[in-house]
Length: 473
Image: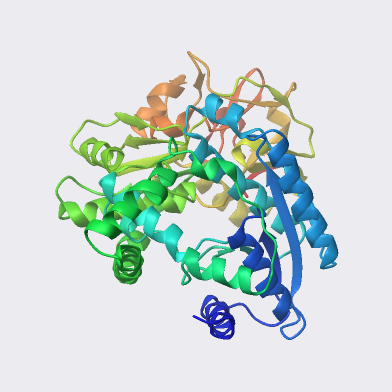
């Protein structure tokens, strides 16, 4: 492939991705031949496509002085091209130890986190990564060895969210030929020769052996396999979405529920529905293996309340199916409440607000009373209700569930244990520690989004009303 044809293919890839004139693109440049080729290809199109380009380099602090030289090289070259440059530092080894994951996975997580955050700050449309067809072949091969399903055999996508990989159709050899022909300088990462890393073992030893003994086209064939599986995965995803749209509901406080029964779907479809459900809530499937999905499938055959936990999320068997939430540590904080006032509970991503409102006419009071009546109602993004302010005495505060909590449930004589209320209402355990409790008169007068105390209800004698609202953001 000559250089002219390579540039044409690069431009075609940008068109397939959807990059338009005037786009802002963050270029992740390590200093190696792939990222330097990508940098120069984008630079040549900068004026004709009116692109806004910025360069970023992340120093992982894995190779001492060599890493610093890579950073200086990327910075100097960006300066030569008159492109904005950002250098970030992160000690990957320490992060990998802390999270008990491989250095490769740690690097992937950190790069994606910081690249996404920086692009958002700078209001850039895309983050360009310099993966090639050779990287694709290695990924598919490694995923196959791990026993991956169709998604894993689909390898690296050309575009996912804001991340794009415009070199994905070019082999590493084609890129090396391009940078050599145009005299584009690049750095060589000495760690690429270390076969303790799985990818380097595949690249430096296994692929050369397989190409010699089996087929010289093995990398091409693996990359083609990825393209086939990606197309099939997209079609299957489109078939799954209608099932999820009817079955997933928001329970509040970051908890979602999937309605499902044991044996309702064939195993293959059930696995896909579960994976898509997790992806919808957690936003990614990193670290979720086939074995994890099988364990979650088995929850459907277990009694209500049984759980499966990963580092990033918890999933629980409910009466309707499965409830899912990010991993959550119980809150013991007590938050003072002003009236009127507003509180943002960052950990739950909710806004709690109190205000005094005018006394309504009789018809509207009837509607208010209906809000206190016990009903099975789904959570919405905003919950609100009304209390008789004259029946409330300070201190006012928000807190969370404690052992032995009770409240005066409307229509029930005497006090009701909060635990019994949760059980009767079939509120998942996953949700119970997240529900804010509004306290006045030294007792619970509102279970956030669910029920109010009978002791503070609005009646025909009410002369002062407080409105409470809770919004999920």
